[in-house]
Each structure stands twice: as C-alpha cells, then as structure tokens.
Image 1 (cartoon, rainbow, N blue to C red):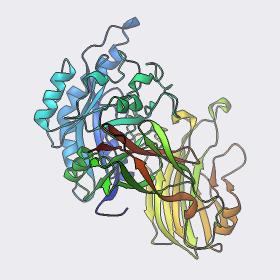
Image 2: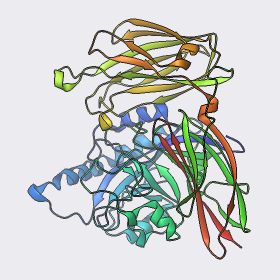
Image 3: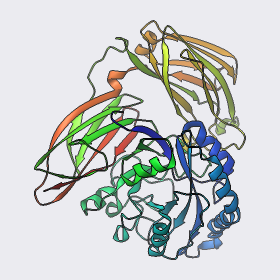
Image 4: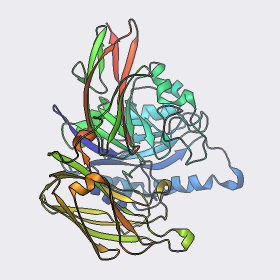
Length: 496
C-alpha cells in the first residue's frame, strides 16, 4: 500500500445468539481477534413494521429481539473491554429491521450506548446524528417492501457507505455474480442495486460484511471490508469510513490501491475534462481482470501477463486447503479436528492469509495460526460439511513465500490422522498436490498450484473523459480466477 495508509480488514455486520443467531458474544470476539483487525457486533434489535406471519412465525424474530434487549448491559461491557488501540478495534452496534425503509446497521463510535427502537427511518437517523453513529443499509437489492433498500429516503449524513456484498449475495447489479438465493425475500431488483443508485446521482462508498448468523465475524466467502487507515484504532477506522476510503471483498484479502488525479477512493473531485486513474491490485489468487467502471459502463480492463515463469525468482503464493471428507449420505458426517505444521526449507514465509469458513458451528473450537519464524506455520483448525456455507466445508490459508523452484514444503499432519507430505515449489508450479489423511472417504488436504506474484498483481493507468455539466462516478472492480472479488469505493467527479 503506497502513501500514508495501511489496509485494515474487518466485519461490521454479524450476529450470534444475542439476536436470532447462534454462539456467544465472547466467541464472536475471540473469532474476530483471530483473523481481523476490527469488528462491530450488530445484534438484532427490532422490526417496527413486521406483519403477522402464518403460524405465528414472527415469534422467531421477536424472541431474538428480546434476547438482545435482556443481554444489552453485558454486550456493552464486553465490547468496551475488547477494544485495544493499536491491536484490535471493537465497535458497539445493532441492526434495525424495516420492511418499508430497508434494514440498517447502526455502529457507534463510543461505548455504553442505548438501543433505539425507532418507528421510522427519520427517527432512527435523528438518533444516529445525535450519537455520531453510522447507519449502513444492507442486502440492498431485495424488493422494496420486503426489507430491500429504499433509495427514496437515502441521506448521506449518517450513511457514507452501503453494504454491497454479504452472505445474502451481491447488490452491485441484478445480473452479476453471487445472486440472492439464500433467503426467502426474493431475487435482485434492478432499481434497488448500487448501479441504479449511482445512476440517480447518490454518493456513497462500498463496504461488505458477513451478516453471519453463526457467531463468526469475517466468515470467508460471506463478506469482508477493507479500510485505508492511518492507525489501528476506532477513530482512524471511522475517519476512513466517513471519507469512503473503503472497499468491499467477498473473502480473499485482495489489496487495492488507487487514486484519481492524486485523490484516493471515495473522494469528491472538481476537475477538468479529463482525469487520470492509477491503480495497483495484489490478489490472493490469479487475477482474471481489473475493470474501471464509469457511470455504469466498463471503460477499461487490465489483465495479468499471459505467461509467467512461476519460479523465476522473487515471492510467490501458494494455498493450502483442508477439509472435504465424509458427508451425511454415508452417515459419517462429523467435525474433524486438524493440527498440522508447515515447514519451509530453502525459502522464507513472508505473510500468511487465513481463509476461514463460518461452518461448522462450535462454541468451544477455534482456528489458531502461529508463525514459526520465517520457516513455517503451525495450524489448529476444524472442518465439517455440517452447516457449511454454500456447501463448502473447507478451510484454507494462503502463504506468500520468498523462494525458488528448489524451495521445499513439508506438511506434517497430527490430526485428524498422522501423515506427512513433502513437495517443492517447482512441483507445485506444474500442478496441485493431493494429500489424503487416510483411505476414502477420510478428510484430505490440497496444495493448490503455485502462483507467481506476476499473475496476482496488476498495475495500470487510464485517462478518463469527464462528461460536461454532469457529475460522474468511477470505481474499480476486481475478479480473481477463483471467483473472489473486490469493489473499490467510487471517486465522484465534477467537471468544473
């Protein structure tokens, strides 16, 4: 990351048993600390315009609201105790439901705040203004009237950003990847998408969060946000959000750096008839394409080199994935505990990036990663098909390694069954390696094919025309070969 900012990763919309999810808040905090820089707990609080449902099923929601109200004193205490400037930032919040106005996540800058049981969005906004709290709409693209966004009442005063992606799916447009199908509120409605709102001239930045109901903030594949900050503390994170120096991620921690005429993502810019955008993207998988989108149209595309020598020297990335194994049809579904050590010989481990799924739910188990200097990583984990998000039971970690073709990877598995696997960077450059812990259908690991950094990084510049007499928006969209994506907050241009 160039300039004065560092990238912090977080989740500011997630749930547990203090609402109508599962898991303790203590677990949520511990999970967040394991692999995030910041998080906000946003327990389910109220639904003022909920209508009675067949069989009294509205009780499911009401019981969740009652649990949050009863537990609110403890929530305030735990969040306040979890915050550590320079180490980890924890925010207090709640989620307000509305059929007509759309759901909103309220995130406070300070500890020990009350829940607001507002009867309309205007009352909620007045409350947030007095508390200097964020008010962030989510699962935007659902139909109006069933908790989709209501752009007619959008006001940027407390809403500098909107949630473009979560476990519900992708609200950028109605035909993009990650459609809405996990819940019963319907598919994506064109008029409620981000693209439609930008076309109306509304201005906001992008974030993503998991909306996980499994007490697992930052769940891989369910949504993650990045903020460009000067420090790791609440004030710096909130300043970045208000300035819209944020971007949305599906899961992989793609690094995005961009500016338009020297101004960062989220900026408002008075300019002439042309501007220059510069960007640098660093993926955690092979990058398929980086697209510049101006006023709803793709105006520029960048691709990585067609062929790259995977072991030409310099850093490379390799992903280790573990899980698979028995499934319910064989009556063998179980939670498998994992313990293993990765040792790197003839190379150096520079960084590692956990990719942790929310399932299976377990109150006691945790994922742990401990560096062994520059030569390896010790991992404690667990996996199962039980409760797997979108049917994926696996966990993974991406390693960034400085080495060459002779660099050797030793994988010593203690659990679920003792086993040892050895390979080299040169071998992984030619193909993946299957590592079973026992005969079919036991759990297994997979070393994915190695990727040189040239395949995961793109830098480019593009000159953009600015329409006369109009406001224009331009943002960056990144897609990796494995399907993971990033959306950088728009820069808003005004031709002076």
